[in-house]
Image (tube, rainbow, N blue to C red; front, side, top):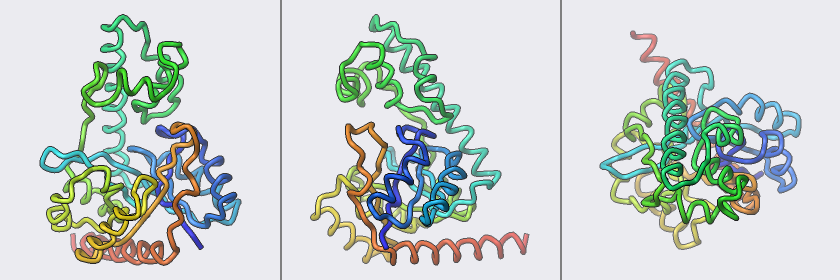
Length: 283
C-alpha cells in the first residue's frame, strides 16, 4: 500500500476537484491520500467521501505558510480536526489576508497598465484561499501572458513588479495550533526552503516530521533528509505536491510513500490527542 500525503484541489490553488484527485489517485494505485490545501480544510469533507467511494484511506490536512527568523517555510498538519474552532478561526484570518493580497497584486498590475480586475481573479479561484496561480491564470485568460510560467516570470515571482509579500504565522505558533487541533506538524519540501539551520529550533518547538519524499527532491536530497529525520527522531512523510494541471501536467503518482509511514503518523496523532485531552481534563 502506498500513499500520497501532499495534494491540492480547487479549494485552494489546485485545478482538480477533490473527486478528480481521488480518481487520478486510484489510477496510480494509491491507497492513502491527504488533501493539504493552503489555509483551508473546506475540501476535506468532499475528499473524504470521494476516497470512501473508491476504497481509499483519507487523511485530513492543510498546508500553512509560516516564518521563523525571517525565513519562509511551509508546515503541513495531518489528521487535523476539521471542525476545531480555533483552527477554523485562524484559517478564516489567513483566507482574508489571501483575498486582500489578490487586491494588492491586481493594483500593482494596474499600475503597469494591465487592466486586470480582482473580480476576474476571484471568479477563476472560486474559493476562499486564492493565490498567485489564480492571478497567473487570469493574466493568461485575459491574453496578457501566454503561459502561467510567463506570468510568474514577468510579474508574480518574488521581486517581480506584482509580487506582494505573504502573511506568515510564526512557525512555533503554527506547530502549536496544529497540535491543539489534534494534528501532526510536518515541514513540507524542506529541500526547497534551504533552511536546514532552522531544524534544531523547529524540533525544540515540537515539529513532528519532515517531508523527505517530494517530486522536486532528487535522490541525494531525499537521503539527506532521511538522515536528518533519523537524527532528530522525526517522522518521515512524502507527497507529489500535485496542483492538478497548474504545473502543465499532473504530478500525482510521482511519489508513492510506503504505508508504514502513515501508521507512524497515526500513532503520533493519537499521542498528541491524548496529551491535549489530558490537559483539557485538568483545566
